[in-house]
Length: 245
Image 1 (tube, rainbow, N blue to C red):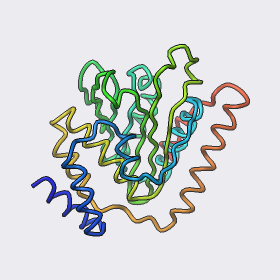
Image 2: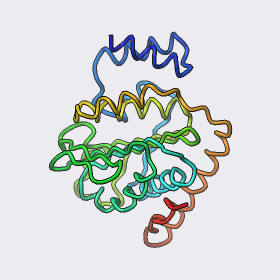
Image 3: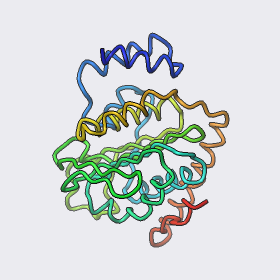
């Protein structure tokens, strides 16, 4: 029944029947425990790049900025590895969540928590595959983007901002939906009480963006600005007030 519902949801979203059936078979075979690996399996044409944490921070801030400026009632997802990493970004994410339809964060939190607003904190174990990952997804009717990265082992002696990750990112609506589906399905398994809210989001039609190339250009420009500034001095602070735009 789950596979049939998945096919029906994809067909309502405009996905071709053959593609919808293949996705359902993949999902039924074995549940994904890794967002990065699941996205690479579904979209092998996405080329991963080895990037430093410093670069990933800049890319993430750019995606968040564009989401705050362009997206109306988006679905937001973030995988932060460690709670301390999220706490550093928490004020910013609280602002983003105020305008989101749903915002879910994964990290090694001590317990599930849903503070005031749309933000949901879901705990993971550091040994979980997603515990080595860095992911960010924003999907809305007028803007979609995702970033997913995996940290190779053996970097315990590496300076924090120089740790490297294999990363992919995309603004194509169907790829972003697949990333969101992987992320929220994982969150649902870790926090079953989210099932109803997650299911409703995943059954919505895939957004169709008329100006996808323009969105990609704007996002790339923001990424270059952040990463360029970080390469010549202290890492720039994210635009805290951008969520009020």
